[in-house]
Length: 454
Ligand SMILES: *Cc1c(COP(=O)(O)O)cnc(C)c1O
Image 1 (tube, rainbow, N blue to C red):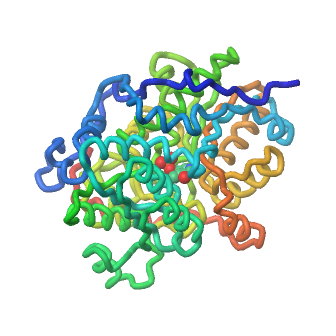
Image 2: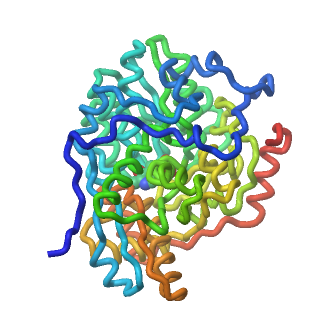
């Protein structure tokens, strides 16, 4: 019998998160206050986040202790299993061994609860009563709905309208976990009303939903904070649990990956699996690290590296990142979780330092890989996860061409059981292979023209 998975015991769960900031070979540019053009201070952020989370956002400490209360919730589904994908390997018939972390085993079905649980916990400790957030496909909203319920907080989620309409089951998950879910753009906020006046039929975007959630948090009469599900340093730190477990599990097998891959929306699950391996690469280890994004929203592969806002209404600090412009409304592809105009500053920095290779795949390639996966490995992947699968297929083919044996590790970020309408559209031949048109880059550059240059 061949060993299919490595399962760690509860007591083997990592007790600290890892912060790649401590090991970067060159310093990152700081986020800027848009008014003053100066680096943001903890005080600037205190209107939207509690201080304990702001400390992590600004931290250069290598290891951050995971609170006991958070570990206790993590243990409901963590440590997540590391699998060997024997059947997918056979199907591809390439000289590769493929290992993956299954983050679909969480109650919400993705890696998102890894960050939602500590955020709800730290808010609870800081005296927050209510949390607002945005969600694309609904995965972050459902994860935060679950986490806020665990710690007795209220939660309101602004959900990108096209996903709200395409994915009623995600909204129902949020409702089941006790959260309110509002289609965005909405009439509940000034940002939403202004946007609707100009674009009454907009499918919405993460950029406008973030503006609404921040405005709600800042203007609410109840003590409310905002939570962001990706992009920021603290989110990437919390997701490092994925890579730290994977590292332990691979050590148990006595192996080390040649290639580590993840799909990239805002960059959190990718940074999560990649962090310990990027650290090794910085210290001289020969490992390739690949981030896969959609060709319809090719932030890292086509966007400029620039200071830009994280949201449409320009309420966030200016972040140094690859961006398609804060006013970009991505094509309505089915991988809602990857429809974001920017990329985490940390991931952007790693791309600039050539520690990470970005690649873009269109949704016909990604769904083709996802269906092959489901038919060989059983688990049905989320449309977002299909992007990393397309990159894994690509890596396997490269190994065959080069005639080299390779060990691949990737993050299987979530299951697609609630996204089957996307598969339906694929089977019916209704999906298009969107590429970003060239004039969109000009538009992106116009949107950031007058901002400071990193
Ligand atoms: C949200 C999501 C993503 C993309 O978000 P990141 O912050 O880039 O990780 C990828 N896969 C799934 C299943 C998601 O829910």
